[in-house]
Length: 421
Image 1 (spheres, rainbow, N blue to C red):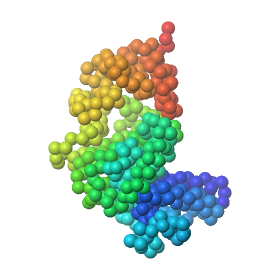
Image 2 (spheres, rainbow, N blue to C red):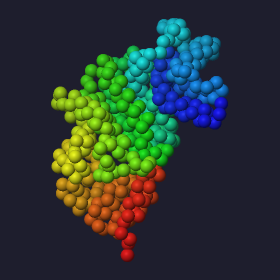
Image 3 (cartoon, one colour):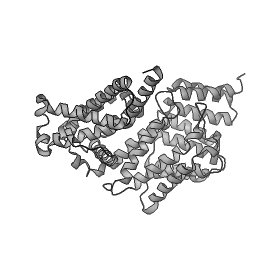
Image 4 (cartoon, helix red, strand yellow):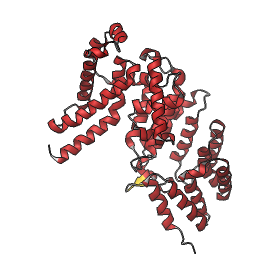
């Protein structure tokens, strides 16, 4: 195998690691029990490592997905046969004839979807803390690294590792069955929150210095579609709202990147916005108006919808967007929401009104530790032609940025400033 084939094999394996990891873990866990989810993860990781070696030596198989599932299934059967594991799996082994079921296992998209839905609610079982629930979802179902999860939580890898250890311990102690998890719909909100975290990590990656990680965004949409299409989920208003939000944001992806550089909304070529995705987002948003439930996702999706249908940035209905942010504050009054609200506020009441509110916000919270705060404030000062203040906040934003993408954008603005005398 030449170097190009080796590179292609590794790329394909990495693709499957991200896209198939959670699927295979969910299927395997169904047969060896949620108390053995770490074993299921080990099986999948070993299968993927085996794939790297085998595909380099023998070439990529005609059906890579089937190869992975077959290899994972055989690895699981070998573990079940070992005497030292007989006691560990004894109850399931006798009650469900696990070994025979697994040997006869036929992989289908329906089976994978069903097992992943159940695994979502296993991870969100009531006895597991919310932080551990989200960490487990991102690790088990989405194949996130501990570093990526830490970035999503704005915390340390040590903290995330502790949450995963605690969550897995609670999974083992609860010994939750997939049948029980399917009825735990009270935790739908946690599942949706985790999916939204996943989408946000793709939309604005904290790792790899990428502008957009399309694979993560598509995975988030796929997981939400599982919820939307499954009959077990009875109340789907929030699911539809989250799907609307993700589709409407994804519609702007192509215009958001130019030559590998982030393009802000006011500079985007709206001809590049994906009309099909906008229509899909609007369709889901319309589904949320059939009852009186108002959610954070619905408000955010409506804001995104206003941006998508506006003929230009300046012609956007800023008054309505500001009103929507005011409604959002009732449900989620956070520094980041107030920071985002400052943009429509400036359009409606002027830059100085936003500057004053942001100064108050800085004194009342730790938002000043986030690069976006300084980037936003710098933009207002640029528009007000206050170069010295803009320069100061751009430099502060650069010092706080952890992603090369954000540093490059702020440095580009810094170079365009009128030199300070």
